[in-house]
Each structure stands twice: as structure tokens, then as C-alpha cells.
Amino acid sequence: MAKETFSVKKIFKDGLLDQNPIFVQLLGMCSTLAVSTTVINGIGMGLSVTFVLVLSNLFISLLRNYIPSKIRIASYIVIIAGFVTVVDMILQAYVPSLAESLGLFIPLIVVNCIILARAESFASKHEPLPSVLDGLAMGAGFTAALVVISALRELVGSGTLFGIKVTPAGFSPAVLVISPVGGFLILGALIALVQWLQSRRKKED
Amino acid sequence: MANIFLLAITALLIENFVFVKFYGICPFLGVSQKTETAVGMGLAVTFTMTIASALTWPLYYFVLKPLQIEYLETIAFILLIACLVQLIEMFLQKAIPSLYSALGIYLPLITTNCAVLGVALLNVQNDYNFIESVVYGFAAGLGFLLAIFLLSLVRERFEFAKIPKPFQGVPIALIAGGLLALAFSGLRLSF
Figure (cartoon, rainbow over the protein chains, first blue to last red):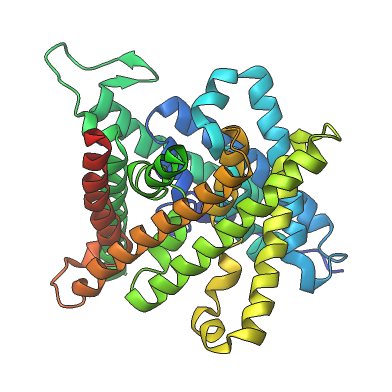
């Protein structure tokens, strides 16, 4: 097979900006809304998803010529579920407090659309190395978006960052922002902002 | 009996799967433009969640637990759900072709709806018995149906509204969802 050419820069630019999983592709909304109440949760979720993405992309890419196309989705899900179980066990063993606050959303990484989408649209068509890079880039984009959302929500909703109080004494936090309601409203506003920026950039071109 | 009723009301309204627990947001946003398809999706998910609850319970207590491989529950459950959705798809195609063609592309999406896997895992986590599991799965599914139905009613009105361009599509749906969640959090506070 001819050696594939790929651009590392493009893969990372896609993952972080042009094809950002949350803000542009609008994937993985459940875990985004649920865990973005504190920055630590956001980072924990982002890194867990990145770990699963990189390894599942690698294995799916290695096996892409052996998996029959009729049962490929089921095979991908089994591979992904295997790695999710690994992450679940690691978190429970080493950072039980994080595992507890992320709760069911760790096993639910299995059905996070980002991972299956990358498996189907990238890893199943590319060689292992670019697939791993794609996993890293998409994971980084997911983590970065989660950090932005969760920092905003934690700052306004509880007046803290990483659990440390950063706002002046007179600031009374808007608790609504860390409630489910605030999650919907803030994510909606941020996606609108991204769409506005995109339409402005298109006009300039 | 009273317990079961309370469990159902909790799953349906007080801890609504979509508005409070954030399960199933992808189809909630993706398939809620039209009331008809939204209701179809909601019914299909409710059906799948009920059957999945009824099947994962014996799988966990009669297979995984005796073999002491409970840690494989995520893998086992998602496989079972994937097969179940495939079966439902084949059954609908033969038995009710009209419903099948209406739901068409949404059916495979149920596999990756986290509400289905979520309810299976929650049943185990909360130590529900078989009856409780099935009731909880059914009520939580109805909660999803209610949520997606309400949002679709709002979104149908958007067609006649002047929405600022950046807010069109998902952002305004999220904001409408947020306002619906506000109403549900009111229910939660009053209980």
C-alpha cells in the first residue's frame, strides 16, 4: 500500500478549531452538559475521552482491513467499550473522588458520538499514525471546549476556579448557571457565538 | 405498590432523564424539528428502554454476577442493546413497514442514545429488582418522550419566528430546552 500523506497541522487545526467536536460538530452534548459544572470535572472528562479516542482509533485503524463492513459498528462499539472499562477502573482506583463526581458519565463514554464518529469517518479509512494523531487532536478539541464551558460555569455559578475562590468577597454566585438550566443556556449561547464568528469569517473570505 | 408509583413519577417528572440527568441529549436536539418524528423517536426509545431494562436485569444477576465478571457490565450491556435495536429494526421492517419507514434512519441511532445504556446501568447501581427495573425503564422512556415532544412543539413555532442568524438551529433549541428545564426544576423543588 502506498504511504499515506497527511498534514499534522491540518489534523490538529481540524480537531481544535475547524471541526471542534463540541462547538462545530455538536457531538457529545450529554456529557458536555452534565460534567461542565467544575473545571476539574471538565478536564477529567476531556482526558478520559481523549484516552479512549486515541486507543480506539489506533486499534480500529489496525484492524480496519479485517473487520467485515456489515458488523463494523458493533465491532467498533466492543473495542470502544473495552477501553472505556479500562478508564473506568483506572479512575476508580487512583482518583475515586473524580470517578464519583463524573458518575455514570464515564461508562457512558461508550455511547459518546464523538468516538464512534471518528472511528467511522477517520480511523476506518486511514493508517494507524494519522488515526492516533486524529484521536489526540479531537480529544484536545473536546477537552479545550469542555474547559472553556466549565470555567465559565464554575466562575459565574460558584465563584471559584479549580475549587479555589477567585472572586471578590462581595460577589454572589449565580447558582442557576451550574444547574441543568444554566448548562443548556450557556452552551446555546456559546454555540451561537461560534456560528456568528464563522459567518463573519465567511464574509471576509 | 406506592413505591413503584413514586419511582415512576420520579423518573418521569422530578428527575426527568433529559432535563435533569442529561441523558439522550443528542436525539433530543437532533430529531425534534417535527412533532411527528419526535414522537416516533420518543416511542421507539421508550420501547427500547423498557425491553433493555427487562433484558439487562437477568443478564446482570444470572450471568455476570455468578461468574463474578460484573466489571464487564458496560461491554455486555451495550452489546445486548445493539443486538436488541437490530432485532427491533428487523421486526418493524416485517411487521409495521409504515412505522419502519417513518423512523428509518433514527432506529440505529437508538443504540448510541445514552439514555438506553444509562437506564440499564442505573438499574444495577440502584439495586432495583426486576419489576422496579422495568417500571423505571418505562417511566424514564416516557420522560424522554415527554421532553422531546415538548421541545418539538416549541421548535415547530420557530419556523414562523424571526430568530437572529447565529442562534438558528441548535443554539435556539438549547435555549428552549433550558427554559423547559427551568419548568422541570420547579417541579423538583415543589416535591
